[in-house]
Structure formats: structure tokens, C-alpha cells
Image (cartoon, rainbow over all chains, first blue to last red; front, side, top):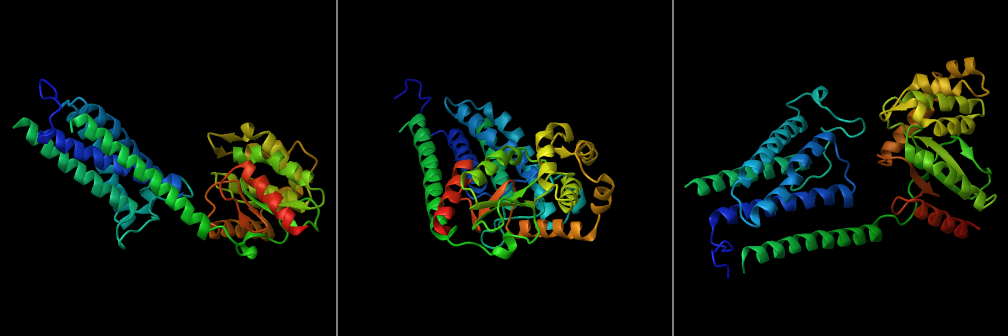
Length: 147
Length: 215
């Protein structure tokens, strides 16, 4: 429908980024569901991960319509930062990092988890998993774009 | 389908799923949760400060932190509820010192309670919150300075603050608060029932219903 084909779907770079956008949007809505609907308390590490996750919904959204491959640079910085914080959080929950090192507000210790899916998937694990998939998809997108 | 329409459709689907999940969860919760009072022995404590007539059949239990701004805002509203149903409603105050430093301040309040001065002391602290709370952290020394302005046996207060009975009363409140999963203040129970959702309107409706049931 567009004369210059900028709106075509068969562009794998766009499709990959769109998949990342779907993922971050699900993660954003999901975490809001946990805290605002179910009332799960939020520790400070969770907040830092949210700071890295939530803006991706808007940044990627803007970069998708119209498609601007430069958005990859911005998204990668957020995803990388989020991945590092999620890793720290998972290690904290697993007890690899001693509790004394945690920067948490009293009353909501980061080492305590509240949701457990399938017996092992708590929220920090879910976060690390999501940031990992986002990172991998962003790398694929970068490869697709540069080739 | 072009990019724009697929993007908007997916965004719509995700948002719809969120709203739907919220509605389903809330419905599920209201049908299974709040019915019936919870264990009264965890909610009330013998000897906790009480405002209102002793024989009132409706008891509001409030878990509070003297450093909590919303607790200070709710205090006159709760008093209004007691006056609204003369002789029928009383409020029991229980400690939930969630702010850093508040544990020392509630010790002062419990020591004032031993002198029968809990409510005047609490009102003084609530009215002057901005003078003894800095960046959401309680400054016990400053709170102490404010209490110095009221008629109290101050030497006795200093000694009583660390008496075993004061410490154990506070400990009991903190433990019960944990058992009731209290993570924010104020938290209200009306004859054992929690608020369906937080708010003054919800509290006054719950009290109204409890008064209707009890009298």
C-alpha cells in the first residue's frame, strides 16, 4: 500500500524488533499485574530492573513506526543494564551474593521471593530470562541489519 | 496487513489481556477471600491502646506507624467514626514500625501508654511529623524533643521505654503484623475483617456494616 514499501512486513529486522517489543510489553504488563493487581511488594532491585524494562516499550514502539534501525543502539543499552541487574538479583536470591551486600529497603528484602511458577521460576529468574531473550533477539536484529 | 495495523492490533490484544486478567483475578479474589473474620487473637492484643467505650461491639484495629503520613491523615477520620456511632465503635491502635527509626519512637508511645497518655502523645507526634521525620526516616531524638513539650513523667518514660513489658508488647504487634502480612500502614480490621481495598470510604462502609450487624 505504501509506494516505497516502508510498510512491508517481510523485513526480518523489523519483525525481530517487533518480537522484542511484544516481549517487553508482556513483561511490563506482567510486572504491573504482580504489583498493582496481586499486591506483591516491590524491592529496590526490582525497581531498577523496571527502570530498564519499561522505557523499552516506548523506545522500541517509536523505533518500529516508522522503522528506524538506529533504535537498536538505544534498546541495547537498556537491555544490557537490565540484564546485569537481573543477574545480580538472581545471584542474591540464590545466596551466591551474601545478604549484607543487598541495597534493599527494610521490610522488603530482595532475597525473598513471592511468586514461584513451575517450582523454580521466581520473578527475578523470569526477569533474567526475559532480558536474556531480549538481548539475543537484539543481537540477531543487529546481524540482520548489518548484513 | 501493514506494520502499523499489526502493531496496533497486537498492542490492543495485550492491553485487553491485561484488563481481562485483572477483572478475572479481582472477581476470583472477592469470591474466595474476604469472607469471614480472621483469627481474632492475631488481630487484637489485650492491653493495646484503645480510644472509645470499652463495651463497644465494633472494634476497629489499626496497625500504624507514627512516621506514616497517611496514618496521620486518617487519624481524625477514625476519630470521626467513633463520634459518628456514639458508644458503639472503638479503635485499637497497634504498632507497625515499618519506617527506619520508628521502632524507638513506638517505644516512647508505649511508655506514654503506661502513663495513660498514649493518645495525647500520638496526636502531638502526628501533628509535628515534619519536625521529626527527615526523608522518611524517623529521628527518635527529635521525637523525644517534641514529647518533652507535653505533661508526662519524663524520667519514668525514659526508664519505661526499655522495660520488658514495653518491648514484648511491641514485639507482639510486629509479629502479628507479619502474620497478617502487613506491609503498608495504616492497615485496618473492623471486627476482624480487612478492608476490601484501601480508602476512607471503604473503611466507613465496613464500620457502618459492622454497626448494623452488631446492634
